[in-house]
Image (cartoon, rainbow, N blue to C red; front, side):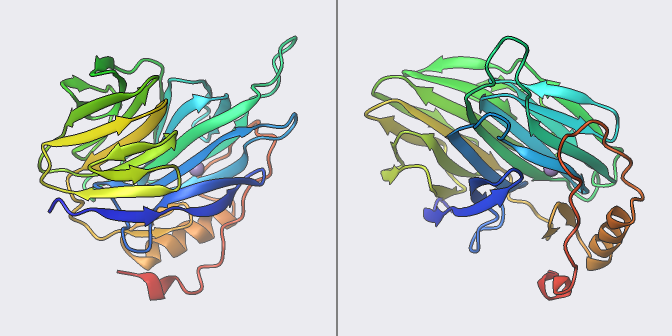
Length: 301
Ligand code: MN
Protein backbone atom coordinates (compact mmCIF):
# COMPACT_ATOMS: atom_id res chain seq x y z
CA UNK A 1 0.00 0.00 0.00
CA UNK A 2 1.13 3.51 -0.61
CA UNK A 3 1.43 4.29 3.08
CA UNK A 4 3.95 6.84 4.31
CA UNK A 5 6.30 6.26 7.22
CA UNK A 6 8.89 8.74 8.49
CA UNK A 7 11.82 6.68 9.78
CA UNK A 8 14.57 8.36 11.79
CA UNK A 9 18.13 7.44 10.90
CA UNK A 10 20.46 6.63 13.79
CA UNK A 11 24.04 7.67 14.30
CA UNK A 12 26.57 4.86 13.99
CA UNK A 13 30.37 4.87 14.06
CA UNK A 14 32.31 3.20 11.27
CA UNK A 15 36.04 2.65 10.76
CA UNK A 16 38.21 5.67 11.40
CA UNK A 17 35.76 7.03 13.97
CA UNK A 18 33.46 8.43 11.31
CA UNK A 19 29.92 9.10 12.45
CA UNK A 20 27.36 8.23 9.79
CA UNK A 21 23.57 8.14 9.54
CA UNK A 22 22.17 4.60 9.34
CA UNK A 23 18.76 4.53 7.67
CA UNK A 24 18.42 0.74 7.23
CA UNK A 25 17.83 -1.55 8.94
CA UNK A 26 15.36 0.53 10.94
CA UNK A 27 13.53 -0.83 14.00
CA UNK A 28 10.19 -0.66 12.21
CA UNK A 29 11.34 -1.23 8.62
CA UNK A 30 14.11 -3.74 8.02
CA UNK A 31 14.21 -3.62 4.22
CA UNK A 32 13.03 -1.75 1.12
CA UNK A 33 12.83 -4.37 -1.61
CA UNK A 34 16.12 -6.30 -1.38
CA UNK A 35 17.90 -3.22 0.06
CA UNK A 36 18.70 -4.25 3.63
CA UNK A 37 21.27 -1.68 4.76
CA UNK A 38 21.75 2.02 4.06
CA UNK A 39 24.49 4.21 5.52
CA UNK A 40 24.83 7.88 4.60
CA UNK A 41 28.33 9.23 5.28
CA UNK A 42 28.98 12.96 5.19
CA UNK A 43 29.29 15.34 3.61
CA UNK A 44 32.17 15.95 6.00
CA UNK A 45 35.71 17.24 6.09
CA UNK A 46 38.33 14.51 5.92
CA UNK A 47 41.33 15.46 8.07
CA UNK A 48 44.77 14.67 6.66
CA UNK A 49 45.71 11.09 7.56
CA UNK A 50 42.15 10.29 8.61
CA UNK A 51 38.94 9.69 6.77
CA UNK A 52 37.44 6.30 6.17
CA UNK A 53 39.44 3.45 7.72
CA UNK A 54 37.52 0.19 7.47
CA UNK A 55 40.02 -2.64 7.77
CA UNK A 56 39.61 -6.13 6.30
CA UNK A 57 36.27 -7.75 7.20
CA UNK A 58 34.11 -10.50 5.67
CA UNK A 59 30.66 -10.57 4.05
CA UNK A 60 28.29 -13.36 3.00
CA UNK A 61 24.89 -13.44 1.32
CA UNK A 62 24.73 -9.85 0.11
CA UNK A 63 26.05 -7.28 -2.34
CA UNK A 64 27.73 -4.12 -1.05
CA UNK A 65 26.81 -1.13 -3.18
CA UNK A 66 28.84 2.06 -2.75
CA UNK A 67 27.75 5.35 -4.34
CA UNK A 68 30.52 7.95 -4.22
CA UNK A 69 29.50 11.62 -4.25
CA UNK A 70 32.63 13.39 -2.94
CA UNK A 71 36.10 12.09 -2.10
CA UNK A 72 37.98 8.96 -3.04
CA UNK A 73 38.14 5.55 -1.37
CA UNK A 74 40.33 2.53 -2.12
CA UNK A 75 38.56 -0.85 -2.10
CA UNK A 76 40.73 -3.96 -1.66
CA UNK A 77 39.39 -7.50 -1.51
CA UNK A 78 40.39 -11.13 -1.05
CA UNK A 79 40.02 -11.77 -4.80
CA UNK A 80 43.00 -9.45 -5.30
CA UNK A 81 41.08 -6.42 -6.56
CA UNK A 82 42.33 -2.95 -5.68
CA UNK A 83 40.00 -0.24 -6.95
CA UNK A 84 39.86 3.51 -6.42
CA UNK A 85 36.29 4.76 -6.42
CA UNK A 86 35.74 8.42 -7.29
CA UNK A 87 32.66 10.65 -7.53
CA UNK A 88 29.96 9.49 -9.93
CA UNK A 89 30.94 5.82 -9.65
CA UNK A 90 29.42 2.73 -8.06
CA UNK A 91 31.44 -0.11 -6.54
CA UNK A 92 29.50 -3.37 -6.40
CA UNK A 93 30.86 -6.31 -4.47
CA UNK A 94 28.90 -9.54 -4.62
CA UNK A 95 29.80 -11.47 -1.48
CA UNK A 96 27.85 -14.61 -2.32
CA UNK A 97 29.42 -17.52 -0.46
CA UNK A 98 32.07 -15.27 1.09
CA UNK A 99 34.58 -12.49 0.49
CA UNK A 100 36.64 -10.08 2.58
CA UNK A 101 37.40 -6.46 1.78
CA UNK A 102 38.70 -3.17 3.16
CA UNK A 103 37.77 0.44 2.41
CA UNK A 104 40.18 3.29 3.12
CA UNK A 105 40.18 6.95 2.13
CA UNK A 106 42.67 7.34 -0.70
CA UNK A 107 46.15 8.51 0.26
CA UNK A 108 47.28 11.95 -0.76
CA UNK A 109 48.48 11.76 -4.37
CA UNK A 110 51.98 13.19 -4.94
CA UNK A 111 51.79 16.95 -5.31
CA UNK A 112 48.05 17.15 -4.73
CA UNK A 113 46.06 17.60 -1.56
CA UNK A 114 43.98 14.71 -0.26
CA UNK A 115 40.32 15.04 -1.18
CA UNK A 116 39.13 17.42 1.50
CA UNK A 117 35.64 16.00 1.81
CA UNK A 118 33.84 12.68 1.94
CA UNK A 119 30.24 12.12 0.91
CA UNK A 120 28.97 8.65 0.07
CA UNK A 121 26.18 6.17 0.56
CA UNK A 122 26.78 2.50 1.15
CA UNK A 123 23.91 0.09 0.75
CA UNK A 124 23.63 -3.67 0.98
CA UNK A 125 21.42 -5.79 -1.23
CA UNK A 126 20.27 -9.12 0.21
CA UNK A 127 20.84 -11.92 -2.29
CA UNK A 128 17.81 -14.14 -2.88
CA UNK A 129 18.18 -17.76 -1.80
CA UNK A 130 18.80 -18.88 -5.39
CA UNK A 131 21.90 -16.63 -5.64
CA UNK A 132 23.26 -16.25 -2.14
CA UNK A 133 25.86 -19.02 -2.48
CA UNK A 134 27.20 -17.75 -5.81
CA UNK A 135 30.94 -17.16 -6.22
CA UNK A 136 32.16 -13.77 -4.97
CA UNK A 137 32.77 -10.98 -7.48
CA UNK A 138 33.68 -7.30 -7.60
CA UNK A 139 33.15 -4.61 -10.21
CA UNK A 140 33.56 -0.85 -10.49
CA UNK A 141 31.01 0.97 -12.64
CA UNK A 142 32.44 4.32 -13.80
CA UNK A 143 29.61 5.15 -16.20
CA UNK A 144 25.96 5.20 -15.19
CA UNK A 145 23.00 6.56 -17.16
CA UNK A 146 22.27 10.25 -16.57
CA UNK A 147 19.13 11.98 -17.77
CA UNK A 148 17.63 15.40 -17.38
CA UNK A 149 14.05 15.39 -16.18
CA UNK A 150 11.99 18.47 -15.28
CA UNK A 151 14.90 20.42 -13.83
CA UNK A 152 16.47 17.40 -12.11
CA UNK A 153 19.54 15.40 -13.10
CA UNK A 154 18.70 11.74 -12.54
CA UNK A 155 21.58 9.25 -12.26
CA UNK A 156 20.30 5.70 -12.58
CA UNK A 157 22.41 3.75 -10.09
CA UNK A 158 20.66 0.38 -10.15
CA UNK A 159 17.75 -1.12 -12.05
CA UNK A 160 15.68 1.19 -14.25
CA UNK A 161 14.31 4.68 -13.79
CA UNK A 162 12.55 6.98 -16.25
CA UNK A 163 13.27 4.58 -19.11
CA UNK A 164 17.02 4.17 -18.52
CA UNK A 165 18.72 1.10 -17.10
CA UNK A 166 21.87 0.86 -15.01
CA UNK A 167 24.48 -1.78 -15.96
CA UNK A 168 24.97 -2.70 -12.28
CA UNK A 169 24.34 -6.44 -11.97
CA UNK A 170 21.71 -7.28 -9.37
CA UNK A 171 19.65 -10.40 -8.66
CA UNK A 172 16.28 -9.00 -7.55
CA UNK A 173 13.88 -6.51 -9.17
CA UNK A 174 15.04 -3.23 -7.61
CA UNK A 175 16.12 0.32 -8.42
CA UNK A 176 18.19 3.19 -7.06
CA UNK A 177 18.58 6.70 -8.43
CA UNK A 178 20.46 9.82 -7.34
CA UNK A 179 18.42 12.95 -8.05
CA UNK A 180 19.96 16.42 -7.98
CA UNK A 181 18.58 19.88 -8.66
CA UNK A 182 20.75 22.98 -8.72
CA UNK A 183 17.86 25.44 -8.56
CA UNK A 184 14.22 25.26 -7.38
CA UNK A 185 12.49 22.49 -9.34
CA UNK A 186 9.48 20.19 -9.32
CA UNK A 187 9.56 16.64 -10.64
CA UNK A 188 6.90 14.01 -11.13
CA UNK A 189 9.12 10.91 -11.04
CA UNK A 190 7.73 7.78 -12.69
CA UNK A 191 7.89 4.69 -10.47
CA UNK A 192 7.32 0.94 -10.86
CA UNK A 193 3.91 0.37 -9.28
CA UNK A 194 4.69 -3.05 -7.78
CA UNK A 195 7.86 -1.78 -6.03
CA UNK A 196 8.00 -0.35 -2.54
CA UNK A 197 10.10 2.84 -2.45
CA UNK A 198 11.90 5.08 0.01
CA UNK A 199 13.54 8.49 -0.28
CA UNK A 200 16.52 9.90 1.64
CA UNK A 201 17.71 13.48 1.27
CA UNK A 202 21.52 13.50 1.00
CA UNK A 203 21.86 17.30 1.03
CA UNK A 204 19.42 20.18 1.08
CA UNK A 205 15.71 19.78 1.73
CA UNK A 206 12.74 18.57 -0.32
CA UNK A 207 9.02 18.16 -0.39
CA UNK A 208 8.39 14.48 -1.25
CA UNK A 209 4.81 13.19 -1.60
CA UNK A 210 3.78 16.23 0.43
CA UNK A 211 6.27 15.50 3.25
CA UNK A 212 9.05 17.87 4.23
CA UNK A 213 12.27 15.88 4.12
CA UNK A 214 15.86 16.64 5.20
CA UNK A 215 18.90 14.46 5.97
CA UNK A 216 18.24 12.21 8.97
CA UNK A 217 14.83 10.89 7.91
CA UNK A 218 14.12 8.00 5.56
CA UNK A 219 10.70 8.43 3.97
CA UNK A 220 9.15 5.01 3.32
CA UNK A 221 6.55 5.23 0.57
CA UNK A 222 5.06 1.72 0.34
CA UNK A 223 3.98 0.09 -2.91
CA UNK A 224 1.32 1.06 -5.45
CA UNK A 225 2.69 4.39 -6.65
CA UNK A 226 3.08 5.21 -10.33
CA UNK A 227 4.58 8.64 -9.68
CA UNK A 228 6.35 10.49 -6.93
CA UNK A 229 6.14 14.27 -6.59
CA UNK A 230 9.48 15.78 -5.56
CA UNK A 231 10.16 19.49 -5.27
CA UNK A 232 12.82 21.72 -3.78
CA UNK A 233 13.29 25.44 -3.14
CA UNK A 234 17.11 25.29 -3.13
CA UNK A 235 19.84 22.88 -4.30
CA UNK A 236 18.95 19.27 -3.49
CA UNK A 237 20.47 15.81 -3.65
CA UNK A 238 18.12 12.90 -2.95
CA UNK A 239 18.54 9.11 -3.05
CA UNK A 240 15.52 7.12 -4.19
CA UNK A 241 15.51 3.36 -3.69
CA UNK A 242 12.88 0.73 -4.43
CA UNK A 243 12.21 -2.89 -5.21
CA UNK A 244 9.77 -5.76 -5.15
CA UNK A 245 9.01 -6.49 -1.49
CA UNK A 246 11.56 -9.16 -0.53
CA UNK A 247 9.71 -12.46 -0.06
CA UNK A 248 12.28 -14.20 2.15
CA UNK A 249 13.03 -13.65 5.83
CA UNK A 250 16.68 -12.76 6.21
CA UNK A 251 18.98 -12.88 9.20
CA UNK A 252 21.32 -9.87 9.23
CA UNK A 253 24.13 -10.00 11.79
CA UNK A 254 27.30 -7.84 11.69
CA UNK A 255 28.46 -8.08 8.04
CA UNK A 256 26.56 -11.25 7.22
CA UNK A 257 23.18 -11.93 5.62
CA UNK A 258 21.92 -15.48 6.02
CA UNK A 259 18.79 -17.43 6.85
CA UNK A 260 19.80 -19.59 9.83
CA UNK A 261 21.88 -18.82 12.96
CA UNK A 262 24.21 -21.74 12.20
CA UNK A 263 25.33 -20.01 9.02
CA UNK A 264 26.26 -16.85 10.93
CA UNK A 265 27.99 -18.83 13.67
CA UNK A 266 30.04 -20.73 11.08
CA UNK A 267 31.02 -17.55 9.20
CA UNK A 268 31.97 -15.79 12.45
CA UNK A 269 34.11 -18.71 13.64
CA UNK A 270 35.80 -19.05 10.25
CA UNK A 271 36.62 -15.33 10.01
CA UNK A 272 38.04 -15.14 13.54
CA UNK A 273 40.13 -18.27 12.83
CA UNK A 274 41.51 -16.75 9.61
CA UNK A 275 39.80 -19.35 7.42
CA UNK A 276 37.40 -19.39 4.43
CA UNK A 277 37.50 -15.71 3.41
CA UNK A 278 41.03 -15.35 2.08
CA UNK A 279 43.44 -12.47 2.64
CA UNK A 280 43.05 -8.76 1.87
CA UNK A 281 46.47 -7.34 0.97
CA UNK A 282 47.57 -3.75 1.33
CA UNK A 283 45.04 -2.10 3.62
CA UNK A 284 46.62 0.32 6.09
CA UNK A 285 43.79 -0.44 8.55
CA UNK A 286 43.67 -3.30 11.07
CA UNK A 287 41.63 -6.42 10.39
CA UNK A 288 38.24 -6.33 12.15
CA UNK A 289 37.26 -8.98 14.68
CA UNK A 290 33.76 -10.47 14.43
CA UNK A 291 31.65 -9.81 17.55
CA UNK A 292 30.41 -12.59 19.80
CA UNK A 293 27.41 -14.45 18.45
CA UNK A 294 25.88 -14.70 21.94
CA UNK A 295 22.31 -13.45 21.59
CA UNK A 296 22.14 -14.16 17.88
CA UNK A 297 19.56 -16.93 18.25
CA UNK A 298 17.15 -14.53 19.97
CA UNK A 299 17.08 -12.53 16.73
CA UNK A 300 16.58 -15.43 14.36
CA UNK A 301 13.42 -15.15 12.24
MN1 MN B 1 32.08 -4.11 4.01
